[in-house]
Image (cartoon, rainbow, N blue to C red; front, side, top):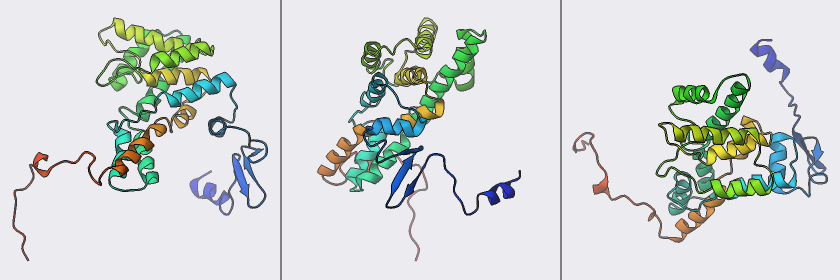
Length: 267
């Protein structure tokens, strides 16, 4: 079927398996009544149900909740939090500031982009090793493709303070024995024994835990969308409480300019 024929089939109608709103009556959310069947579901459980169509057990939900909680840093020096705080400093609205901050959280080098690479790498490596490949081959192929391994190494410090508490929680909940998590540690051991000397960071850990809970690559990337959100409002609020424009001001003499020299304006 070509493009025009395909488009013609969808003219004047919208089909959805996900849900719909009947004004004044009810709301259907993935085939269930939102206001009567799902009304007791907490927000995170509903968010995950919307992404996956599945419900998770109490232990699984506690781990997934912790993944969000453990990375809610209220530090405006962080690249995404800075945008929320600058919005407060310039007297923009909180909604615009937080939306922009969440958008840049998907940064390719140190945000959602590297997280996706971590998930894909672990998923692919586990599949290749099950088919007879070895860990070294998987790691070297990833280095050849990207010059880095998503989820390993960290700017400024080679370590991650979130690893231990999240692993301790996963162990208490009995969710620390999955194959992706086991592989994640094998990769770390290989990198530490080799010339790379890189430790696992939070991206690899939550990628492994999420895969072991049965989430796909796209589902995990949607799940981590609000990962930093709880750390953003404090910085925005504090910046609004300070004099306008006083967050990270840069005096003109501190700006290096190498463009055209000063020139006169002509009427």
